[in-house]
Image (cartoon, rainbow, N blue to C red; front, side, top):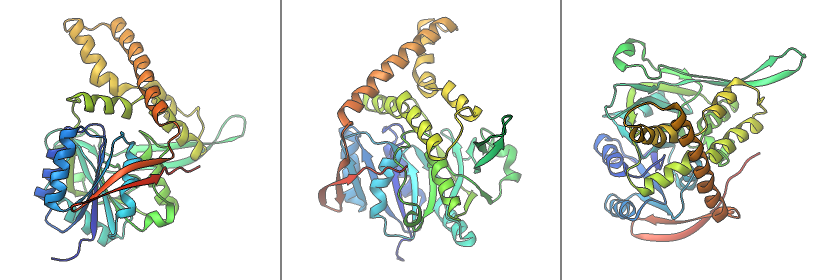
Length: 356
């Protein structure tokens, strides 16, 4: 068998309960050789034990932390261990389809792309509803009334929420400006040019930041719709899922990420791009927990007043949860972790990665 050209890096997105389905899907539908590094950021014991058993049986590296990790923190723990030409980031709530990896690699070889993403669908059925087929993301400058120049964000998702069947004839390999970390093939050498992923992006805009950084040094991005994956968003199923979900989509993490995005790229805070996101703060929690709870309490009837009171309470509870996490890790400068490689376990620490 030929040597692997790709290392898959799997990391938690917002929950742990889909771990087995995700891993089994990858091994079932991937025929070309690959290395695998699994980053397990604080999963419950039964998930960790499953991953340990799989690491020993299948021979992949497992990196374990006892704390929850922001996505870029998790990916950065793996990148220094990647020795292959390509690294492929994939979230732990993704299902893949036959030849998904072959077609991503073929696209990278034929286009010399730095980054390639598949057609990413959403839901339990692969290749049904589109979540993303590439998109546009760039900074542009605009002169306003007083003559000053402001920097704003242009972002556009291709075919979002469209049925695949309705746009099948429009889905062709295409150069684009951004991909998402649900599934993203990357030439490993790019990290020598732009550095590791920016860990100040705790919950949002990390993919936009990375893709614009790639473009800024002359890298190219493509979407290859012949490769299809789907991510499966579901309600958290247990306390470990719930607690990670609430931190992952916390007001504090989202605000910090948006503010860092503005500062890093010198963007105007008055841009409607940011106003929209500040207005929707906490919407993932509200959709997952608040609205179903209000509907249950009100016996299926809509109650705008009750929902608003529940949203206000959610914000307060969420502030308390993130404050506790911040207290515990406020002075943290390294991430303690255990690397399991074959049958050997080594304790390590890595400094947190920050940028301007």
